[in-house]
Figure 1 (cartoon, rainbow, N blue to C red):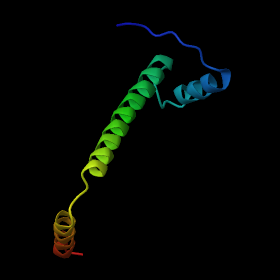
Figure 2 (cartoon, rainbow, N blue to C red; figure 1 turned 90 degrees about the vertical axis):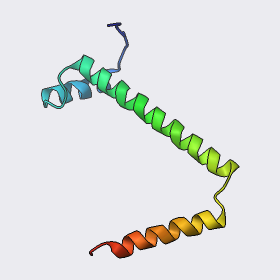
Figure 3 (cartoon, rainbow, N blue to C red; figure 1 turned 180 degrees about the vertical axis):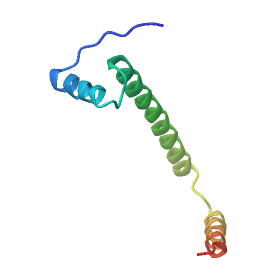
Figure 4 (spheres, rainbow, N blue to C red; figure 1 turned 60 degrees about the vertical axis):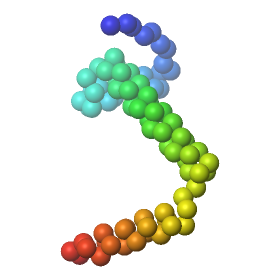
Length: 82
Protein backbone atom coordinates (compact mmCIF):
# COMPACT_ATOMS: atom_id res chain seq x y z
CA UNK A 1 0.00 0.00 0.00
CA UNK A 2 1.44 3.43 -0.91
CA UNK A 3 2.26 5.86 1.89
CA UNK A 4 1.37 9.50 2.24
CA UNK A 5 3.56 11.84 4.26
CA UNK A 6 2.06 15.11 5.44
CA UNK A 7 2.51 17.80 8.05
CA UNK A 8 -0.18 18.91 10.47
CA UNK A 9 -0.23 21.90 12.73
CA UNK A 10 0.05 21.16 16.44
CA UNK A 11 -3.58 22.05 17.23
CA UNK A 12 -5.02 19.70 14.59
CA UNK A 13 -2.69 16.90 15.64
CA UNK A 14 -3.72 17.40 19.27
CA UNK A 15 -7.37 17.13 18.27
CA UNK A 16 -6.67 13.92 16.37
CA UNK A 17 -4.78 12.52 19.34
CA UNK A 18 -7.72 13.41 21.59
CA UNK A 19 -10.03 11.42 19.29
CA UNK A 20 -7.64 8.47 19.52
CA UNK A 21 -7.48 8.75 23.32
CA UNK A 22 -11.29 8.88 23.48
CA UNK A 23 -11.48 5.71 21.38
CA UNK A 24 -13.21 7.44 18.47
CA UNK A 25 -10.55 6.30 16.01
CA UNK A 26 -7.79 3.71 16.25
CA UNK A 27 -4.70 5.72 15.30
CA UNK A 28 -3.39 8.67 13.30
CA UNK A 29 -3.17 6.71 10.06
CA UNK A 30 -6.77 5.56 10.39
CA UNK A 31 -7.81 9.15 11.12
CA UNK A 32 -6.16 10.37 7.92
CA UNK A 33 -7.62 7.49 5.86
CA UNK A 34 -11.10 8.08 7.27
CA UNK A 35 -10.96 11.83 6.72
CA UNK A 36 -9.73 11.45 3.14
CA UNK A 37 -12.36 8.81 2.39
CA UNK A 38 -15.12 11.07 3.71
CA UNK A 39 -13.75 14.02 1.76
CA UNK A 40 -13.49 12.07 -1.52
CA UNK A 41 -17.05 10.74 -1.12
CA UNK A 42 -18.35 14.23 -0.33
CA UNK A 43 -16.63 15.65 -3.43
CA UNK A 44 -18.21 12.88 -5.52
CA UNK A 45 -21.66 13.67 -4.11
CA UNK A 46 -21.13 17.39 -4.67
CA UNK A 47 -20.16 16.71 -8.29
CA UNK A 48 -23.31 14.62 -8.80
CA UNK A 49 -25.37 17.45 -7.30
CA UNK A 50 -23.77 20.04 -9.60
CA UNK A 51 -24.33 17.81 -12.62
CA UNK A 52 -27.98 17.26 -11.69
CA UNK A 53 -28.61 20.98 -11.17
CA UNK A 54 -26.91 21.83 -14.48
CA UNK A 55 -29.08 19.27 -16.27
CA UNK A 56 -32.29 20.73 -14.78
CA UNK A 57 -31.15 24.25 -15.70
CA UNK A 58 -30.38 23.12 -19.24
CA UNK A 59 -33.67 21.25 -19.57
CA UNK A 60 -36.16 22.29 -16.87
CA UNK A 61 -39.10 20.12 -15.98
CA UNK A 62 -42.26 20.86 -17.90
CA UNK A 63 -45.38 21.99 -16.02
CA UNK A 64 -46.90 18.57 -16.73
CA UNK A 65 -43.94 16.80 -15.13
CA UNK A 66 -44.11 19.01 -12.07
CA UNK A 67 -47.89 18.52 -11.77
CA UNK A 68 -47.48 14.74 -12.00
CA UNK A 69 -44.81 14.57 -9.31
CA UNK A 70 -46.79 16.91 -7.04
CA UNK A 71 -49.90 14.76 -7.46
CA UNK A 72 -47.93 11.57 -6.78
CA UNK A 73 -46.42 13.09 -3.63
CA UNK A 74 -49.85 14.20 -2.39
CA UNK A 75 -51.23 10.70 -3.00
CA UNK A 76 -48.39 9.07 -1.08
CA UNK A 77 -48.93 11.44 1.85
CA UNK A 78 -52.68 10.81 1.84
CA UNK A 79 -52.06 7.04 1.94
CA UNK A 80 -49.92 7.32 5.10
CA UNK A 81 -51.67 6.01 8.24
CA UNK A 82 -50.87 9.12 10.31
